[in-house]
Image 1: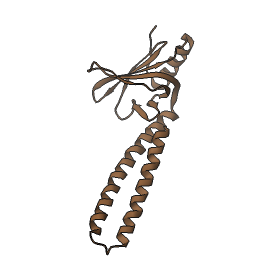
Image 2: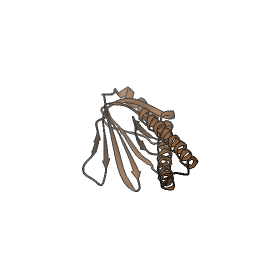
Image 3: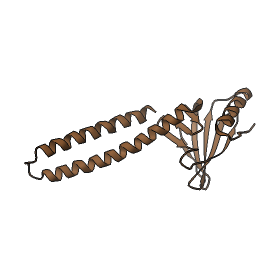
Length: 174
């Protein structure tokens, strides 16, 4: 989350600089090729505005996940599988992950579901990992969050929270 905030601040600062620089260039209209410089700065400003909007959307998604937190857990590894492919994408993020009914937030990586037409299909919980299956553009994808060992009581509590928050009954795997 801090990385997303930092990127947002840098993009806002770069946008402000471009706006001030554009006003400065317009004010000193007498230099040769000034119109070319103005055009280049305005082009850069447009690209920065689009980047700022995209990063702000990511920030809003991250805040939605944080505000609707179901589970805040330390992970060993996150694996992402596209079910039509054989090889998993492995993210060795040893750190904390926030899981909500709207997605998963791991530092600056956001995995969305239950929003923007990305349905959450199933949840599987066992002592060593939690598996989420969701559909993205008609392709099933699976996220496997490997964490420390959980007791049966903790697994039941987590399953109850997911059932209450998402409406999906998690499958408990022994």
